[in-house]
Length: 481
Ligand code: HEM
Image (cartoon, rainbow, N blue to C red; front, side, top):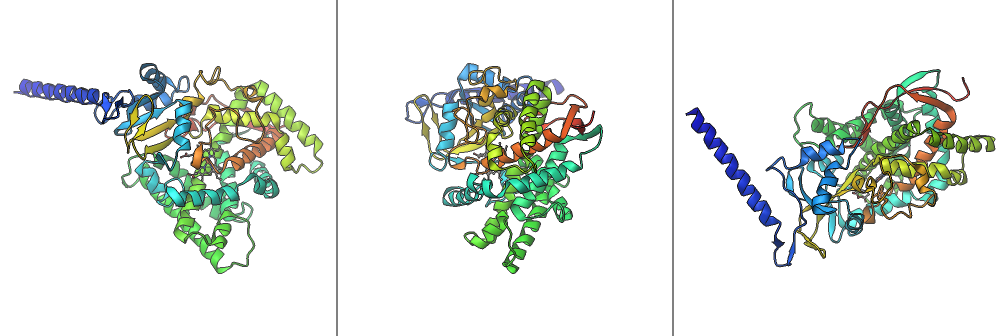
């Protein structure tokens, strides 16, 4: 009886697998009457698909492109894959096609994020909304974070907040986990920039915003609100941060006479958006700026620690700046003059891939000369697949800031494959701010400290990018022996 049962189960499994293979094989034929096939690719196993090998490969620091390389070899740089529960997914690591997807946002493609992420960041989040509202929100953020505005207003207070945070790291042979410490100073900075909380006076309120730490873990997860799960912690974190934002909105409305220079006051005074949209915009700005820049800074220190020649060149650049300044206060021109630092930042972003991928959905059937992507299919623009490809960058897993030596300092990049800040209508509006804060942080950190790694650490890429052990370092003041 038991043997019969086992046989029945085995037959059922074979039937399902064969049927699946036949169906998926058919799907590789021409699509509709376009006389073009779907992108070539694998469908993997029913339900689980290829998510596990994909994640395993992407988190392997020695070869994060393994999954991509295998698929690219068989199917080309735009291929079908069965990821995150859907076989209707197309992955692109073809820089031209990736750019085409990003640049046609709102026309041929829409942004599309997982339900867990949309729930956590809010239905009016700039990342989730589409069409006219996205364009309006994007324009507003762009204006507030433009290079002109930053050059006249931001340098002094950014420098101030970083130096204040770094005071807590002083002392001889001070051991700390830099990833966590950078998180705190970047949160102080964003709390000031977005809702005018001051680390010298409002630390209690800023500490409440540490709830943001739970967001990253909740965005790529099963959206089931089970107590103690990452998703449920994310929901709770959203509530805490939203509550703080609403309190601030109320205060701005009741006391319009108070002069403030934060993003929230600007939005409330401007009056273009209802409160719910303002709150979700501030929430998504916290989300988009906090994890990204703090991780980028952590990675910059990690890469410099591992590349003594680059660290030496950074020290020379920043020591020269320090000795040329009587009061230590930097200007926009000083920032623009940090030539090597700009190369270090670009190389950190390329190799670190703080935003490893962006998601899109085909808004209509997309026809290219080689294939069709049907309307509604997901497109995973795998940015790290492009940035770590030896066809685009020689020796791509090596930190080599000198590869950027022909690049303009402040402008994005002449390099057509550099997609670290996305592209098209959703190109990161925090681009100038992110670069400025990275340069100012590195200036203060390198001028103040020398350091060594306490133990080896490595990057992980998914579901978000982080240092596995939090980058444990031993710091001492530069001027001590
Ligand atoms: C190293 C730091 C950063 C990196 C690598 C980065 C990367 C990106 C990328 C790749 C996108 C495109 C997402 C997409 O196409 O779906 C994006 C969008 C965005 N970023 Fe950044 N970002 C960084 C820092 C910041 C900062 C500091 C802010 C704000 C102060 C910010 C605000 C935003 C916003 C609001 C969007 C959404 C734009 C839209 O959908 O219209 N980012 N970022």
